Image (cartoon, rainbow, N blue to C red; front, side, top):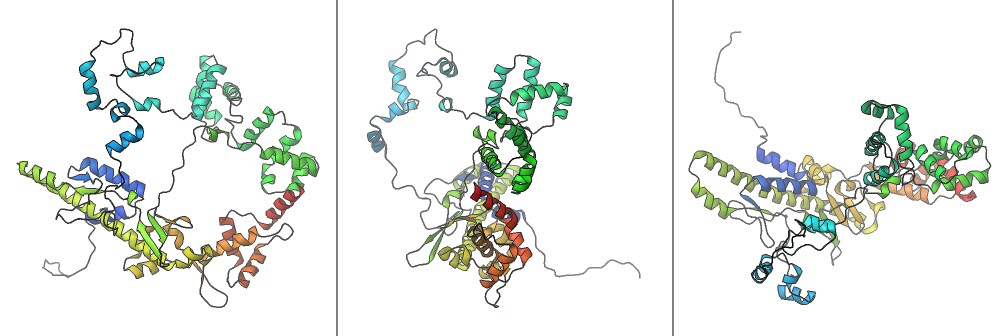
Length: 514
């Protein structure tokens, strides 16, 4: 067959991933915090994109108002009607604002005209020296409000202060500071002593000697290499580390399994002494370092609010505080576009205008999509909001996608890293999507999350003399109309961090004896 060239016309369909489409997809799956960071970065590099002030609605290039928050009610971003006026603030403070904010330019101008005295020759040169000396800051000096904010004491700083008092040898102090840097937030030493010795060029004996000094610092139990050593340090400080207690520490795995007969044999004590030892062990702190400068937990900010309406339905609203408020600077573009003299400047302005316009529209579309998906989830899971977890229905992405006319991948991106605030708590949107478990009578299927909740209820209600095994749980669930296998019950129980029936029996019997 000879090769030849020829012209052909073919009609095909293909999805073209334009930069604007990729941007819209990216924004759709971002959380509120990531979205805020992304918009801040765009505000810095795009001169035609500006932050919308309260009362302004974002606008796109065609001058049509766009609500960046989606289908929210008109006036969501309006100025607060309860804003306090200047006179009301002065009346509430009992003084003029110039006395409250002395650094205001308008407040300093009259003072500069009436007081021109030279500074004291002995006065510190700047505010930091005033602060260090304990004197009041000069009226005309640089005012730093951050100087009055107390710093949170960290564990490393607390240990370093004690190291300065405990060690005077510079070499041992350097070793100690290196070991302190290896202590994590919980108070445990994360590094290997052999690696530390090789890194510092010191002997392991010197490293262990300095470590023993640090382990005597406050809080008691700090710089331990594992849980057993941490508890041993605290017991040694209380003068309670006898051979029986040491044997108990060496068999913490048996204690976790509630194997009390095995512990009695290993420790050589009777039931009463073992119970006292366990009680004393529970009084210790397994993570002593958390009392110093632990990382603050970032609270979850919901993206959607669900409230009960007077007519018995549910009202779904977007959290406008999590929605970036940006708009296109049309007036600024009109001004600078007249000064563009070459093609490079005109191309740059056109790209900035197109990027800003698409960002505002993408934010608007993102908000509308989130509201649409959340509304459908509330409609599908109406029984959950009324009666609780036991009435959670099986739900998947396909059901929601078909109901709102979107693709499953779009629904998946919307429900990622998004949270809904309800009267029953704050839930991730993916929480409402659960697998289906068949019913014994062929009726409506049960939600996997509802079944897990039912298993937890049964175990919480069991008596110490009647511990429910996995087989018994299967029978109880089948009596309730849930067709489930034993291995599924075991999997759900382990996911709930519930021990086996043997361990629960040992734990409850030990609690009764105590």
